[in-house]
Length: 143
Image (cartoon, rainbow, N blue to C red; front, side):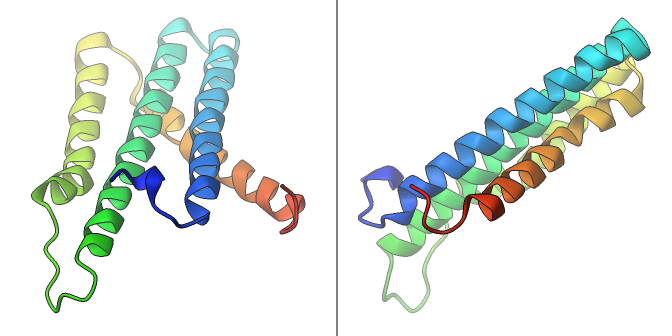
């Protein structure tokens, strides 16, 4: 059984919500990278784009990890001590390690400014805020 086949009607809403945040993250990252080309340099733009890509990847892994955790909890409903798969812990903790290593590699080997990569990582926050505003102004009875 996949997560999307669960009988919960909120599953489709969550999928749409998650999809919008992912696209907004990429969109804000791309817009910031284009602005960085004109305002700073090509290397800075690459750093912003790389940071936004890492932020997008971070969100996907977080969403997948939470989905796996939800699946495990539902599959073990009623058990006094549910077991969480090791892969969930790896995705939760490993994503920070991999992002840190990727940032280190990008800055060290490609000479991209660290601040540019960090600004690109903020694309996820911008995407999440835009999605939150969309949800607020959309209202509960839209769709």
